Length: 350
Image 1 (cartoon, rainbow, N blue to C red):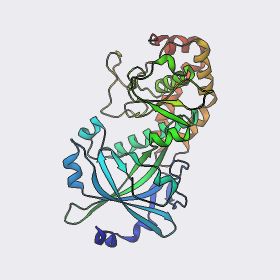
Image 2: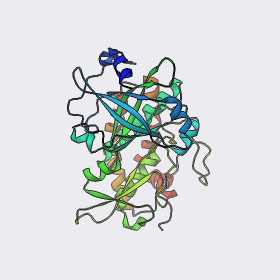
Image 3: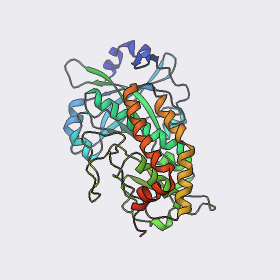
Image 4: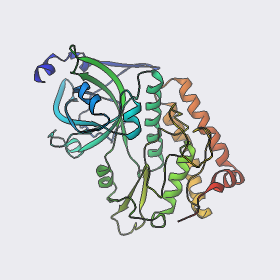
């Protein structure tokens, strides 16, 4: 492995990212506060691709080497472990997402040393379509960040993979993004994780539920459940002045805003396409729903700007995303329409 690292081409240190807006130079990180910044970062992963593909259906950690740039002309190489994750995507994707475990790597950096295991979302398949799907899911996380800090932060990555299982090491570069570990999120929010099934919807802050449910409706996602904590994490603030628990949504690849070719609506919704919307939140008081509505209307431009200013998607794709959101806001702006078309489908409270 050491010989391989010596043989790695130095072009990685000066590589440029080309996109629809021209040429963007990837600048190095100095502090490596992974989820406190937005700038694209560059990593290199050296791993045995044959072993990874063989273990994808029964994932177990395998050794790999992570190469990161900490400052100008300074690279750090650390042993890590990776394993495929995602029940569906492990079987469907040519490049399934993985969990990156950097425990005991000793980066001598407070952010990295405390990170532990992180989810890394990969480009599922080779065609450009799947690159767009990944980037759109990344933007959905960023849009929810606009609404609240009570959310998973993400960081866009240009990952160079070096597959050592080939006679000639196969090197390829793709976009991906890291998701903030849950233990980092609860530390940031001064909270603790709540085990699945250990809490009822009545113990969760109503406005938080309304915010999540309206956001899932906005992006056209029915692949979530509050009752079963499906694609939802529940955390409990340690602050005695904030007794109700909070819900944190994640995993948005089945949403209509992304419109992945494999995505289907949740069972028993009656929907024919993920592009169709259905409100799946519980019935809450009008005052709570209206507070959520005000938040979305107030943050509309900021969320749309997240999409408009994103340099790694074509103008055509961004226009399609904005048009889908526009339909949602047309419903939201009219009181009678939102009461009937959105909140009228609410689910009875447990």
